[in-house]
Length: 112
Image 1 (cartoon, rainbow, N blue to C red):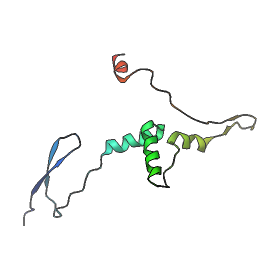
Image 2: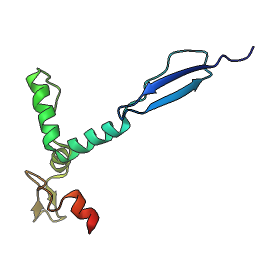
Image 3: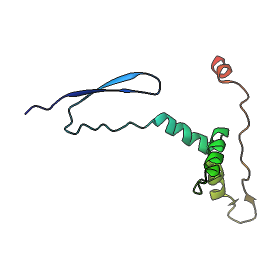
Image 4: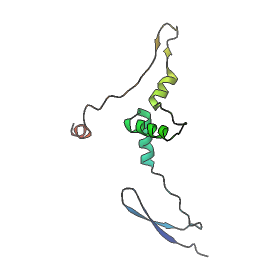
């Protein structure tokens, strides 16, 4: 018995329509996660961007209690701080990390 072939089309967020041919015996297709959005959200959490802070505030306003209000850099710095020398005479600790606004726009950086 030959495998049945079925075609389906899916529309991506960018508006493109992709045709898929399926030779599977199960007709259900698995939705492909938006990997770029996942990576972007992860980076926003790491640097503690304004977008991430708004998302945290909205989640807390909705009553979610599991949401952490510390960014990835804050968590990392808290984990490794303080750093002490072998003689324990000096100590380096990180507190209140932040990133300043960019000095040049994306277009200016591309020109340089």
